[in-house]
Image (cartoon, rainbow, N blue to C red; front, side, top):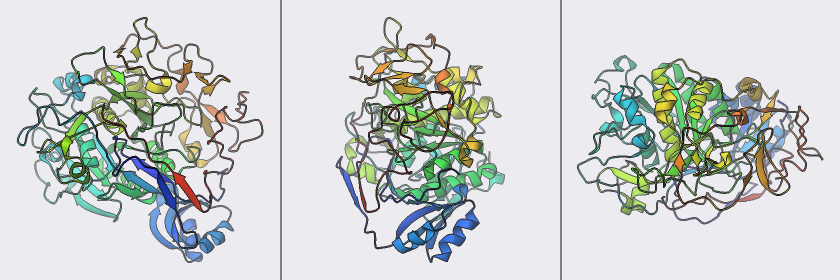
Amino acid sequence: MDRRAIFAFIGIYFFAASAAFVFGGNDEINVQTVIDQPVSYIVQGGSLDEVIAAVQSVGGEITHELGIIDAVAATLSKDDVALLEQHGDLQITPDGAVEVAGKPGGGGKPDGGDKTGDPSTDYPNLTSATALHAEGITGSGVTIAVLDSGSMSHVSLNKTPKGVWRFLSQYDAITDEVIAQINMDHLGTKRGGTGIITDDAAGHGTHVQSVIVSSATGSTGFYNGIAPYANLVSVKAFDANGQGTYADVIRGIDWIVANQDYLGIDILNLSLSASPQSHYWDDPLNKAVMRAWDAGIVVVASAGNTGPDPMTIGVPGNVPYVITVGAMTDNYTPGVDNDDVLASFSAAGPTVEGFVKPEVVAPGGHIVGLMNNNTSIAVAHPEYHDGGAYFTMSGTSQSASVVSGIAALILEAEPNLTPDQVKCKIMSAARPAVKADGSLAYSVFQQGAGMVDAYDAVHGNNYDCANNGMDISADLAGTVHYGGRANVDENGNYYIMDLEGYLWTNGELQNDGYLWTNGYLWTNGYLWTNAYLWTDGSVGTDGYLWTNGYLWTNGYLWTNGYLWTNGFVGNATTETMSVNTWVDQE
């Protein structure tokens, strides 16, 4: 690999759960690491065996074997790190904290909720998933893995609408053990469900799963989940306080890829996000995500809740290959089309490497889903719990969950599609928000291709519009890296090279409501999804030089905070990080 520098960065803080909350408020988090005491690092190398031998040779304590990225997590002293630096071919990064947490606000209790009944949800209708349900397309035969805070035992998650057991497994990446797993010989039957236990003390994972697969029906008679017949795998990487580590999350992805064939895992939902601290190809979590995509798993990631300003897409949503999802809201009027808006918290692109993100937006405002009332989130904010089993929250966590469900509907209809083809179908069916004159109401850097439409995504016939010109295997090998078509001019306007009509001057977010149209004519299609080769992995005096002659002056013109000349940003002592700015529900 061309960037094997030793990174001396302490305190990467991840904030998963783009669901618009944070336990304990919006204060900045100060991270102080005592550098003369052992701390946890992720050590990567040419092979797992090589890394294990190197860490053991200096006396480090290995806590996680992360074969998916040829790495281990290990407790190392500063002297251990100094010795490992002598190897020269190892990449060392601190094992930062990852958070899943919540602070909902506004919106009140789920509409129609009570202690005995199921409230109706609007997002299946908003995305036309209910029209597919009427045709018998419900996600049957497709398996979705949700990496989050775990899952509570509930009939709407455990079983399909016909009572067939579909909760396949729950793996605890923190303790490295399978909590419960059905006998796969019983898949598709009503047997094999014993042993599933409630294990989501935070509550976020259950809510995310509910949006994707809930088999409950509300007063309208429609299913509450986007893919109510899909199979479910739960991977727990966050504790009761919504906290985890890089190592736990990566180990969870490792387990998912290792069990992909046995459990039939097709889709991975990652409702988590944090500020990038390196180029996409250097981040160890991003590498694991890319491995999953390369293995044939469709990865759906939240954009993050740090919008609406540009360049706020988080990790791992900044991975160019995956489907990154922003959030829109129906303004509490699901039956009215012309007052829908982009959620103000939804993170916007471009990424540091110039890629347009998010790919699409989906419902993410005041989303109703399952959650026990004794979870950390519900106890802290009982005003958003209906007193029974339902909780309301907003965020790009929820919008990503909607798209994971849509991906399941697509794969039921066409099981042999590649992740790139699924991404293309979702993008090509999306409907951008437009003004009365037909012009875009929001930039592609804010809404991507637009609002998802499940029905058109399933029945569409466009398969070749995503990730063109990129070789993910070569990217992982470090022989090539890629940049997107986004740039910014001297006036601070963002645009896409070689395309007209996509200039974006960052300003106030449009909030007076627009129609989502399926009649918009994209100039040159989705050419912005194509990529350029990155000629080297470093920053020269003239910025970033692309192979086709594009010369970025001063590093994209957005070098402030993004000039990474030696891997991760930071220093060897302390690093002050700021949590996502969580917003009230919209």
